[in-house]
Image (cartoon, rainbow, N blue to C red):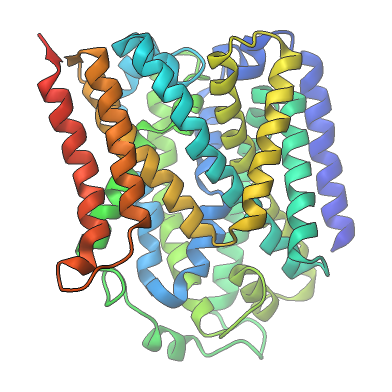
Amino acid sequence: MNIALIVYLIFLIFIAARSARHVKDIPDFFVARKGASAKAVAGSLVATILGGSAVIGAIDSGARLGGAATWFMLVGALGLFALIPFADRAYQHGKYALPDLVENLYGKGPRLVASLVIPVAWTGIVAAQIIAAAKLLMTFTTLGYTAAAIIAATVFTGYTLAGGQLSILRTDFLQACLIILGLVVLAGFAMTGGESAAPSLSAILQGAPAFPFNTNFSPLDLFLLILTYGTTYTAGPDIFSRVFCARDTVTAKKAIAMAALTLIPVAFVIGFLAIYGVGLGDVQGARITAIANQVLPQPLIPLIALALLSVVLSSADTTLLSSSVIICRLFCFGSLAKARIVILLNGIVALLLALVFTDIIGTLLLALAVYAGAFTVPILWGLLGLKAKPKFVAAAIVIGGILALAGKLCPALPGALGAHTGDILMIAAFVVNGVILVLGRER
């Protein structure tokens, strides 16, 4: 096991070192000189989306959500399909990162707000990947949480700052294939009974919360998931960072469609594993690795370990780079040396967050909710060709983000309506955001 992990990490270091030799300037480092094929962009999209928070976190949520965990990836696919009509305009108005798009749509004021808010939220996403990686390493090794988190953060931060976007695109397609292969193999053994000590499949399916809805996941929860999670696949920094790497808009659209279609069957595999994991009871570390230890023959355990490591690395590096690009553009850091320093500091902050918060899905959804409440409506408004005064756009971003944050942090209040206070605030974030843009609309 340890040998397989070491060989895999050496392979990634080799790719990063090789890519670093080809990185000559900022366009190489940030967007791979806008020359990526549909296959490369689609693979990178899938690998990024199937991150630790999506796979490991969703399967961990099986005890509470059961089959409804399937919705995480289905909602992601829906968000990607919704992006296709906007891809032309997004590609034309974007350069390196989402704030560039915001500036071209609305001006420098909203760009400044976006450049300040997005890195804060996305550092939380990076922290979620570190949490996922730490739980993975805890299961396959004897490491404690703190040591595992430090090792995970060191690996993907170093990998990202070495080769930038060229490294990410070169490895993401292979990592996406490895992730999907690992999930399918694991689900296949679980369905056929796996090892004799594995729980009874029929008993687990009968006792687990159902898909599409159950007592812990209602249609309202799905609506809120679409608002706070699905919309980030339509208007999220990581998604746009992949789109901006494509060689042209046709390539970008084809890649988005390929990625969305791939996510649909994967969503049901993840949902099945979430249900299956319920029958294992309390486990230490990630539940998906506990499933692997139960159902897989010993020779296949390293395959799952490498697939899960790919899960974390393929998402963490993209998220870390997206956040760091925005910071570099904000402070006009135009050199590769300064860009790499920003990535290092960003990775350290994410690690500190991961050492304080250990709930993957909770950390993920908190960060995404703040982003979605702040930016989804303004970005889609601009991509539709609508105009608004910059000060109104900035106000919509700030107020929407504050309401979304309040919605995630607000405790349930007494009474039937009070129990939904957080949901009301989340919905209000989008409504108020839209109202402000309507009031500030320019003809």
